[in-house]
Image 1 (cartoon, rainbow, N blue to C red):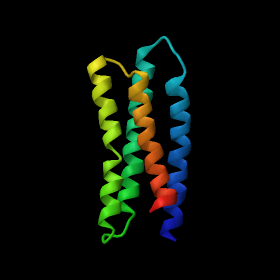
Image 2: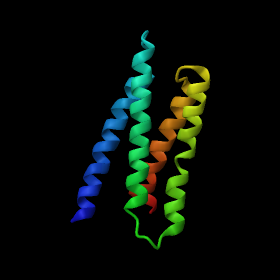
Image 3: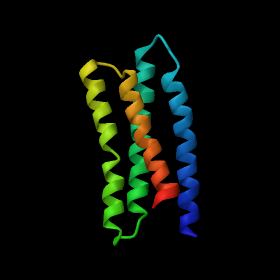
Image 4: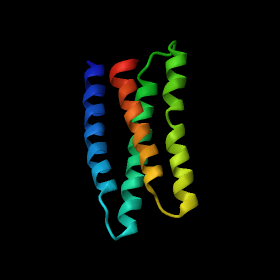
Length: 110
């Protein structure tokens, strides 16, 4: 019964990430909007990864490590965004890749 609730939560997070990704890539003149949606995408990718890693049994050590290693592209994206002063396309794509990787791992691989 608990796994059904986790699946519903994961699907809600994925739906909100799709909406966030759409608004993250729509060109706007205000850089604050881009930073807000970029921050929201980072938070959602961390949440997806945390749900993925913590929902696995404790004896699946390799899968748990692979789940947490999925945050590396998001960390690189944050470093690129901080170095440039604003989120650019590469940083946004890296954060999107992290969320997609976490969702694929949760729904299909592990």
